[in-house]
Length: 212
Image (cartoon, rainbow, N blue to C red; front, side, top):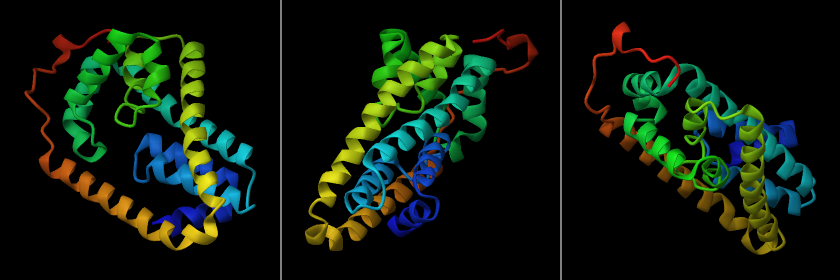
């Protein structure tokens, strides 16, 4: 799988990094924990600028969370939970995940968007309650951009520092990343098999909400 990510970067350059990070947020087939360190690793070998790597990863990540914000904004909490109950098996998103993200947002407010971008388990989902709460878009973008920049820079720098010693570790990068991908695939299959939408409510027109 690392060869696939590497080939995207080699073909599309820094744009490929942004594309992969965008897809990672919309639907996580390849985690940022693999994309950005590998991009930083490539940067250390002189194949692209580290600053461009971080900027592209941040922009792609930001563009990837905006659809989730608008989903929460226009669908509201009840419809989002209904979507999760119906299609969450494939999105690895359950109604309970929506509840957990909402609770986190209620406890921490706007800070949840900033710090949530640094937490793998809520990095994407935190956009949903921000949209449900109708958080102002400029505020959401700024907080998401800052949090995303910190996260992508941290991962890219890890890869960059690793790349400083690429002659020693190059033989280990592929096998280790493959183990990570296998673990992610196994976890995804587990989520699909064990998906529990939870108790269902009447979702008829009488129960529709105006925005959340």
